[in-house]
Amino acid sequence: MDDYKVKIINIEYVTPDVKSLKFEKPEGFSFEPGQAADVSINQPDLINEKRPFTFTGLNESDYLEFTIKIYNDHNGVTKKIANLKPGDELIISPAWGSISYKGEGIFIAGGAGVTPFLAILRSLERRNEIRNNKLIFANKTEADIIRKDEFEKILGKNFINILSNEKLEKYSYGYITEDFLKSMSGDLNKMFYLCGPPPMMDAVEKQLKNLHVDENSIIKEAF
Ligand SMILES: Cc1cc2nc3c(=O)[nH]c(=O)nc-3n(C[C@H](O)[C@H](O)[C@H](O)COP(=O)(O)OP(=O)(O)OC[C@H]3O[C@@H](n4cnc5c(N)ncnc54)[C@H](O)[C@@H]3O)c2cc1C
Image 1 (cartoon, helix red, strand yellow):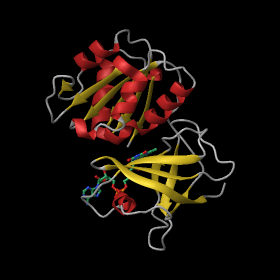
Image 2 (image 1 turned 60 degrees about the vertical axis):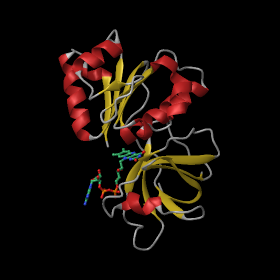
Image 3 (image 1 turned 180 degrees about the vertical axis):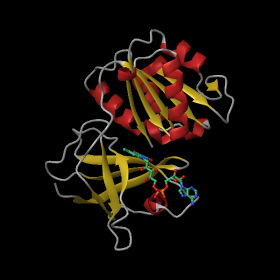
């Protein structure tokens, strides 16, 4: 299928290094919550620089949304995305994708790895199907928590934060450990959804294995 040229409608920071982009939805375009697309900037020197990003809005909306972590420390595509303005164009592929909802469980995200879960949890909320799903969200500091207020509203006490670089009474401190996972997960006979940077994914997957979580109950994507 062909790629689509879409205009940016709005672009704004949602944390100090994460931007939300709202852009036109091509006619007939649809995606499943958790799916991504290959994306490039429609400028001659950047059009072939494709990077994957996850749709974070609702499929039912009349616009599309990405939530993108900007790497300002090197001259990659996300640094260029940070400078885009409404009216600038992206080229997006049809949706493809790896993570999808397979039933109630624990979502474990590191930083921008929360994007597929943002889409899935927004969609579950819209259908009144949030049930007992939990999100364990690992970040450096409170300011880095993407869509904090919205997750609090959607999940209430099932929104669990752990910060590695800031000690706050209301959140856990440090990195995710086996004991932490065990105490937060309760019964381990459920789905585990995992998305984040590769070192975090490796560590958490090992911990889940040690806790005898069935391999087939782990759905994952490295960012
Ligand atoms: C299926 C999928 C879906 C994704 N969805 C999202 C999403 O919704 N939101 C999101 O934010 N990300 C998402 N990602 C990750 C995203 O694709 C990458 O962050 C993005 O491609 C980075 O592009 P870049 O050109 O800025 O960096 P690249 O140049 O491609 O570099 C990528 C990584 O290498 C590091 N790096 C490379 N070179 C340097 C350097 N010289 N100095 C310092 N660091 C360096 C960067 O820190 C970065 O982690 C997704 C990834 C996958 C696989």
